[in-house]
Length: 168
Image 1 (cartoon, rainbow, N blue to C red):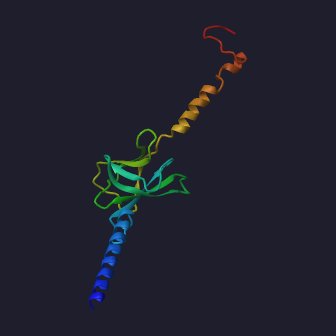
Image 2 (cartoon, rainbow, N blue to C red):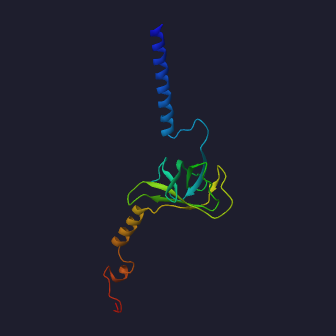
Image 3 (spheres, rainbow, N blue to C red):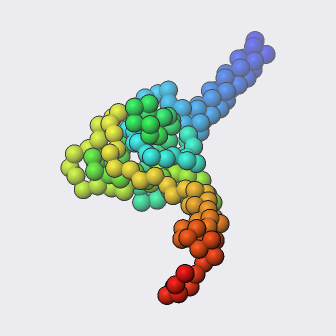
């Protein structure tokens, strides 16, 4: 009888530990099974280059959500970014969503600048004002291209640059 009681308590203990581990694994993985703690809105950007699924959404440097998905809108050909926002955060309909970089070469995230409107964006609504991130690779390639391309006026002088004020 004593052996059966010890085995029963050991089994119950193992089940409790497994339930505890499962609960915290789900919690740390940000999976929601026991009620929604967030709502989804989306924003459209000219470019979402470097932004990844799971990136943070911040207001004033405070984490208020995460990027749930990034797709291409076939009609507008813009990047549609789906954002999961914590339920306790209400976004006004005049907020501005911007793609930002943490540090010089850090990860991309969404920064939301609060608006002043009394109307809030409903779940599934659109953040209308957006700012894409600066694409430094594109800017550098344009700068290099400008520096390596011949002067616009050099074809008139046979490739030689004439000082201003001197005639041909």
